[in-house]
Structures are given as C-alpha cells and as structure tokens.
Length: 365
Length: 246
Image (cartoon, rainbow over all chains, first blue to last red; front, side, top):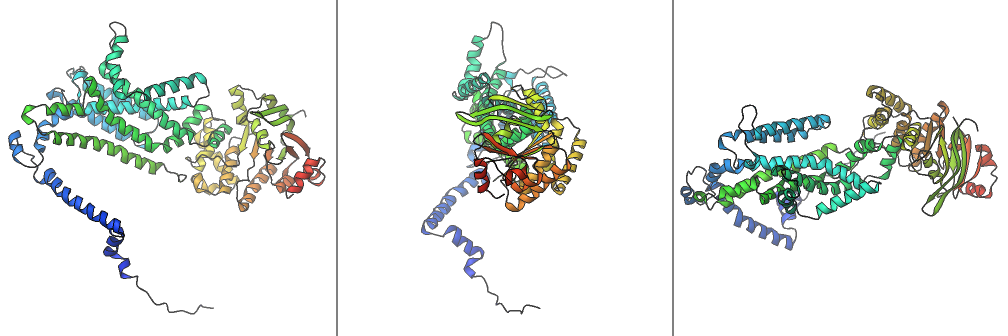
C-alpha cells in the first residue's frame, strides 16, 4: 500500500529575509536606537582608523639613522625601536654577552610551552623545570664553562620579567594549593596559620611587600647575612601570588559535591590520594578561568620591581627613553613593550581556552 | 551470633541535638542479605553509613570483620577496603572514564598492577552488562548505566560487604529494573554480605534473608521477608506497610 503523492508547491523564502541586505537590516538598523548607534560607530571608525593606520604603517619610519631624520616624517618612528631594541629587551646586560639572556629567554619559553603538553603532566615536569632553572642560571650568571660572570644587578629587560613571572607562577601555584587545602583543614593550628597568612598578604599591595623585602628585611637579618636582592624580590612575588591563588583554588574546592569525597572515601583512598586523583583535578578544572587571570596579572605585576631598582622590561624601556638624542618617542617605546606583554598574556589566555576544551568530559554546563 | 561479620552494640548517634540513631543493636552474619526499610528520616541511611565511617557514631560499638571502628584512621581505612558502597547519586568520578573509575581503587589502594586491574574491571563490567561503555565518561551515560558502573566499581575492590544506600531511588522507573537485576544477580551468584536500604519491596521479597524496619532511629521490627510483609507485628510496621506497595 503506497501513499498517494501530493504536489506541494515550492515556495521561495521572502527576498528581504536572506542575503546581505537582510543581514545589514537586522543587525545594524533593526530599530531607531540601533540605527543611530550604527551611524555613530561608523563615524567613530572613520574618524580614527585611517589616522591610526597612517601613523602606524603608512608614514612610519623604519630606516632612519638619527632622531632628526625620524622627526621629519609624520608617522611612527619605529627606527628608534630598531636602534634601541637591545637595551629595551636586555637592559644593562653587557652588550657582547647578550646572546646569553637571549638563549635563556628561549629556554624559558620552550619550558613554558612544553609544560602545556599534557603528556608531560607527571614527574617529568619537575625534571624539565629543574633543568631549565639550572640552564638559565648558568647562562645568566656565567662564571663557569668559560662564560664571564655577570652579577644579577646587571640583568634586565625581558629575560628578567620572564624569570620573575615564570618562577613566580611555577612556585606560587603549588604553595597556593597547599594553602587552600590547609584553610579547609579540620586541624585548628593548620587552618589558623593558613588564614592568617592569606589575609595578611592579601591585605597589602605588592609594592609594599617588595619594599619590605628590599629595605626592611636586611635590617632584621643577622649581621653579615645577605640575601640577594633579586632572590628576595622573587620570594616576595611568590608569597604574594600564592595567597590569591589559594583563595581561587579554595573556591574550586568548595564547588566539588560532598558525594565525590564520599565516593573516594568508600573506595578507601587516603586524604592525599583523594586530593591528587579525584578532588584537585576537578577543582582546578573549574577555576581555570580565574586562575589564568591571576597568572596574567602576575606577569604584568612584575613590572613593580622597578620600585626596588630591579630592571625589568618596563624599567629598561624607561631607561631607553632617557637617551637625549632620541627623546620624544615614548609612545613608540611603550607600544613596543605593550606588544610584548600582550603577546605573552594573550598566549596564556588562548592556552587556557584550549586547555578547557581539551579537559572537558561532557559534564560541564 | 558467633560468626557475625558486622556487630553493632548500643549504637547511638546525634546530629547536633537530633537523636538520629537510638540504641541500635544489630548483628549481621557473613553472607546474609538484609533490606532496611522505613519512613524518611528514620535513620536507615545513617545506620549503614556508620558501618564504613562515612558518619561517626557517638556512643556504642561497631565491629566490622573483627575490627572495631574508632577514630584511628588506619582501622577506618582497613574497614573501607572490605566494605563497598553504592550511593543514591552514584558518586562516579566525572573526569575519569568508566574504566579509570573502576581501576582507581585497585591500583592506588590495593596496589594491583594496572594490567591486572583493567582485566578485573572489564570482567566486572561484563558482569553488569556494560562493557561496551568502558571508555566513555560517566556524563555520557544514563542513570541506570551509571549506577551499574558504580556497582562494578565497588565490586572491583573485592569487598566482603556491600552497602547499598537507596540505589534505585534516583532512577527513572524503566531503569530501576536493570539495576535491580544486577543486584539480584549479585545476591544469587556470590556469597556477599549485602545490606540494602531501599523502598523496592519486590527486591526484598526476592532476595532478602531479613527485612529490618526502622522508625525514628530505632529498629522496630525485623523478620524474614514473608513473615515481615504478610504478618507484621508492630503497629508502626503495619502503618508503614499500608502506605507503600508491597
């Protein structure tokens, strides 16, 4: 038995419902307010973008050899960056040895990129970072293998920013996890210590911690005991970041339902096994967005070490600007270092999105 | 009872001021199947959760397989290796595959090598008829499938005692049967001691050696299923049975 065929006339969709014209109509001019906003936006773009493109690219000067030549053109003076890039990137490091911080930067970036590879998320990560630390230390300090010794007050620029933020994040993260677990502990002594630490550190700005580490700590140390200034700044950064990470991670821990702990308990898993295998993987996955936000903020906060006279990327840029021969081009220099900061921060952000997607197992909302 | 595997003597528990377990005296023989029923708030879940120390009792003694439950963590962990639990809301680990859920206990607690743990896991997955889902995540399974995985997960630890805390209460009706079939199969094939808190009275009739009725923290009546359902002695038992389908 077959169903009789029926002739159904084919209807075309209405012409104003499809195509470019319809899109413009519905997205840009769908109501009087939206139409007004569209016109204003277009006007704003026309007023600014051509001028910006003009300044950035068309009239920019890349090949001038003196400042006066550069001032003659109306566009950006990228030639200054070409001239000064070494001092901006490497600070006061001896000119002939600057290949060393360059390689050290490369090693750090490689270690960071490799750390994102999930196959390495076990003990080999520890090995990787120990090797990276040793390699960077040898390259930057020298004194062995025929390399001349360069003391760390001469380090500066991008390698220093990377060192401070990379080791800052790498060491603050485990400390933050321990603090978060400690704050949730049932043992009163541990809980109090963690609470006091977190609230004290969160209550002061990073600048004051850096200042205390540079100026106050030497006063309290016994006579003759000297801790390197860079090391003190690094420790201050680690302690500062750990407090914020602890609270973020604690938020993630609170989101894990009690049933997960009970399921793990019923299998006989110990406290640390539970945390490592069941609870922390889920908790950290939940807080990837705010945690990476903290990493990004920490990377930029390292610029505060200028207050204690350590030459990070921002300070090196300022030093480049003190050259009287090339005065007046501060915009170009700040755009240059902003671009460097942006590359690193945006990469971290993009990586976190990738990580979230890779780790999703279909139980998120 | 001489060879009781679980012995509870004068067990009392309070949640703050609320007296949730009152003078519980219970002995469970090895291989016995017990169904605990009663109205909500009667303390049935609390009772079985005290057996593996998910809840702490304040008074009395609980002795599981010769070990008394105290504050000593080592005793508690030893007991938890012998007692498996299946929860109302499954409590599977969502970030691990089904296979990983099953092998995590044997590998980390029993120190079984990975290959052996996986072989055992596949065997139990086949037993609960869900082996084709081994590499899926719990979030991709239905409720009935998740509960069967949860049962397999507990079985992988080779426990002597299995506790079931309302295992089918969170399931759609059509999935209840598949889980009950697994539990009946478990009861009939293995010599496992089973204590099950449930409202499924058909299951109790089929499988239980003893039905225990609890109300307001006390054990009111306990008897064999036929005697319990057909000839309840206590007034409160009669009231409860009249309110449910049995």
